[in-house]
Amino acid sequence: MPVYNAALQQIDEKETRRYAGLARSEDFPTKLISEACLDVQSLAKPMGIYEIYPYRSEEAVIAADQPLTLTGEIVKKHLSGAEKIAVMAVTIGSELEQAIAAHFAKGEYTSALLLDAAATTAVEAVADQLNELINQQAARQGYTTTWRFSPGYGNWDITAQAAVTTLAGAQQIGISVTETAMMSPRKSVSAVIGFIPRTSAAPQAAKVKQNSCTNCTQTNCASKNS
Image (cartoon, rainbow, N blue to C red; front, side, top):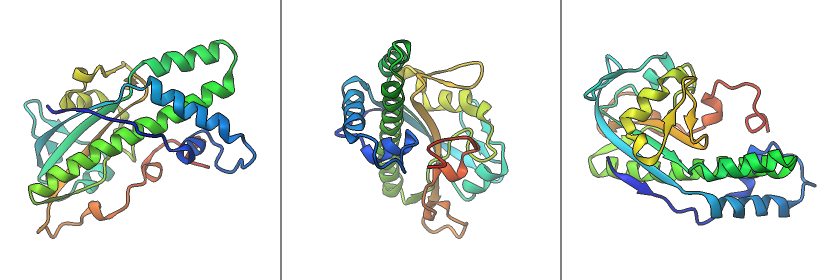
């Protein structure tokens, strides 16, 4: 299972503002957002890992040594026509969680919330980097790719998280899953990406722009409603 050591050259301040629920707050000090992004750059330990498996599309089964049957019509439709599945996981480590908790403990709520938003931006950037690496590998093999789809999106139950992270080999980069299907460290992402033959006549979700907010089941989310 290839381990990817990512680099965070910068953290998108506009995305950080959005994740903090400040997209429409033009008067909020830019300096505070910039400082949060720099803090995350210094504390983050970005890593990723993935594995590629055969996929039986008609049965919606990832054909690993311990096969995983996907549930939820949206994810099954999304991967329709795929011959292989890349299962990936990324994290930026646990130091940031400790820093965020320390700010909350001191009553520094604005700093804590901005750090949390910048950390979310960072882990999504790492996911984008690994996603692109997988896309390039797929292209060399004659495939197009779907955008990544994570447990909890649409009607794919979050309880699939443990199986997905296991298939990705996420324990090798320090990721575990709690009994409530939450990833630890908290700023981690898992997902699947479908490999669809370029000659396939099947509907190709690869041509649909990724919009994780559209496919997320959370309704009370500041970043989604910003």
